[in-house]
Length: 222
Image (tube, rainbow, N blue to C red; front, side, top):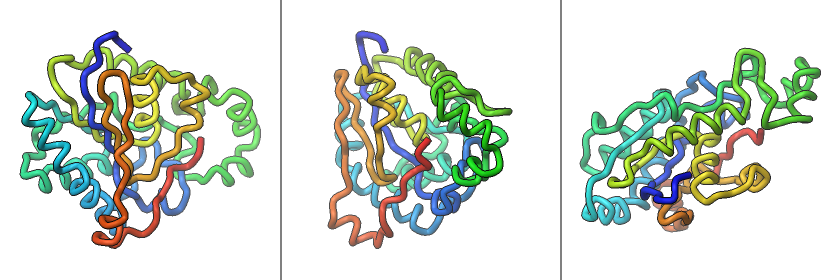
């Protein structure tokens, strides 16, 4: 990261059908569940004041992955904040890691049916490139390039996926790869990245109850 960090409001897309089933999504595009829709409504409400304060401070640039589940999340947030969805710049740099031949499979299925590939990945999880997909190191470089190109004169609202979410957060805070590997967050958690620090914006219990959220779906741990 550069010495001067822009402020980033970092948001993960809502729960999808494949999140529930524990399947690797990558560049495939399972749709949001009803719970996922409710999650994003709760996130929008939880971030309403923070977003308003950031808007009062100056210009905001809005970014989303080009994948449908992130774009749907961005659209819901735009509606909740009385904004326009077309203000979100759809950027392929923010798409999830491609898992190539593994997409649509659970990790248990990969371990069973593609055992040699799974073992190679386990032995070198950052540098092993899934057949037809990307290594985590390749995604790290993609995200690092994107971060370094951000204007430092604007605040940035970013809707992305768990893999990119963790890399953005880690690079911003100067975390090691080992530290980034330990990151875990529910889909209702967002982060305010500011002045080189990452501030977790957890979901209050009152909003969990108000929006009838069903648990905290996590991504596949890979």
